[in-house]
Amino acid sequence: TSDSGCLVILEYNSQKNQLFRLHSVPIGKAGCRRNVPGQYLSNDIRGRSIFVAAIESEKVAYLVNRNPSNNRLQISQGLFNSRPNTHIHAIACPDSPSPSFASLELDLYPSVTDPSLLPKFLTFYELDQDKNLLFENSRQAIDRHANILLPLPGGEDGPGGLLVLAQDSLIYTRDGGKQVRAIIPKRQGHTQPLLLTSAIPYKYNNNMFVLIQSELGDLYKLKIQTELQEEAGVKLEIKFMDTLPPSTCLCFFNSLLFVASECGDQLLYQILESETEFNNQPLVIQPQSPPKNLQ
Image 1 (tube, helix red, strand yellow):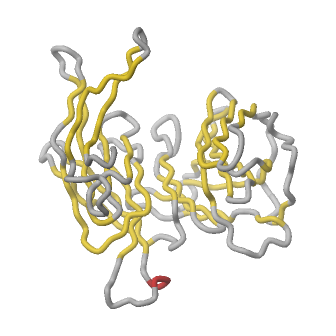
Image 2: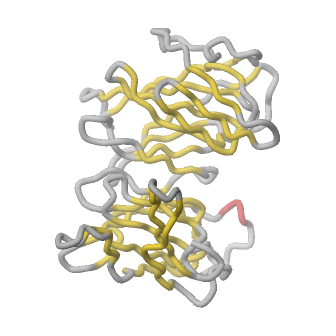
Image 3: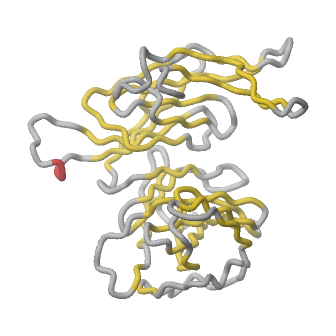
């Protein structure tokens, strides 16, 4: 998406080493307006749909498939959904049997003059392919300091659902499910609230892990266990791992961690996996530089 107000789909041609435009779908008059979708963009993990949201109120979903005759990519007409007086902070596409989307929304009430009293909600939307309709499926109150939504693989690859990064903690939840919270260990003497800024999931030895970084650069390792005995169906265990330069984005591939640094060089690390116990991890930590679990 861009300030032109269009959703553009590009295809990479490996022989010519070029990007070619397949579709250019108009969404609004201009992409720089607060109520024109384009600020937030997310795609379904299984490649079935695209979800685009504006800063305020407006959301639109597109179905994506391939033409059986020529195998060319097709995109449907946009299915819009609007909730007045909402400010959207983040969107994500959970792994689910049918295309679904989640939106982190702050309700705006003209009668409320104190911004700290405005409630924040995690809203799940579902795309009905038979009726060609985008509708709200469920809505749950969420931590007001939540700022990032991270979808987790489902099925045989993971527990599915969403990981919500907030202040001093993180929350696991799913559509219509209960919330499970884990507290983030903090540095000794650090009394200010700690904000989580980036995260990336990965799988190792049939276990689902998530690497999470705070605004101070501390890197944490979250282990997600499927626990049928637990009321919410999952158990969260977290430990401090290392200290890296603060990043805007993390990328994981084949035990390699790419750190897109916010104010410095881009870094590439290899993760040294270990079977460290997660139990009885301290809530007070010390910065660890240079890193010991990365090289």
